[in-house]
Amino acid sequence: MNPRRALLAAALPAIAGCLPLSAQAPGHWPPDSLINTQVIARNTPVQQVVGQMRNIAGALGVRCQYCHVGQEGMPLAQFDFASDQKRTKLVARQMLRMVQEINRRLDTIPERPASAVQVSCSTCHRGLNRPVPLSQTLVDIAQTSGPDSSIRAYRALRERYYGGDSYDFRESSLNIAAFRLGRAGKFAEAFALLDLNEQLYPGSSGMSVFRGNINLMRGDTTAAEAAYREAVRRDSTNDEARGRLRDIGKSP
Image (cartoon, rainbow, N blue to C red; front, side, top):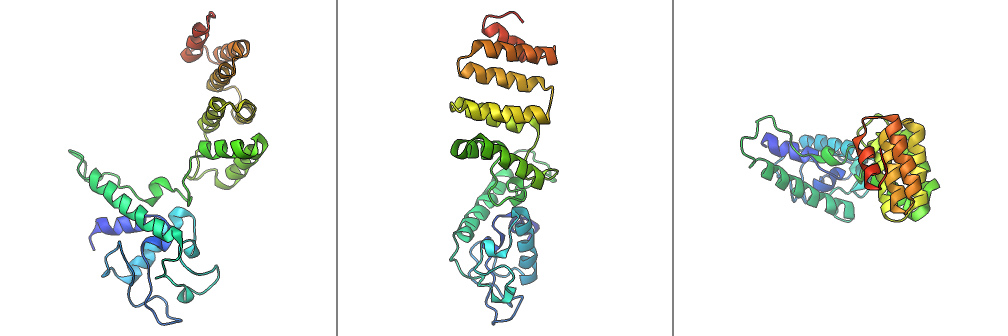
């Protein structure tokens, strides 16, 4: 098996969803051969596939039963790895094909260095089975369950994932979520997220610009002016805030 193919197999989503293993007698693990493989070469060594599955599971933050028929704590020999019963396994095959196609296209880039980065499951998933950006996650929760639920979700995710690659906990995530909520007319939700961000990143000039922009969305020019002036007070070089003041007919 060439190195590229091995990398792609190890890189894609949904644990063993892409690479069904089985054909073993009951109680026998690992299996002697592969069956129902539709993406990976049938002659791939079983132990190599098992290692790839571990990598995939880690990249998605899941375990075998996420895609395969079996239960937590059940011996692997009792899993039905060949079954296509679970939707996640079917999706995984499509995802693997997609990444293979992306990498094929990347290979056509002119003068691409030999050490160029390859797309893998970790490129997007980063330990999450559903790789949605933090800002979008917070917008979705705020729109369906309100600002308090969104803030609780943020704190819980930060407690669990801070320091890893799964979510971006920089100031910009909450600012972007607030802006999108403001654009959707959810002003209470937007300002609640900005207030939380203010606690985490006090004194941010950029955050005051977002506050001003959202106030403009709701038609409050007075509050917007105050926010832009606060942005300039916090950072006199903030040209965006100065430009916004000029746009609403105020002197910076």
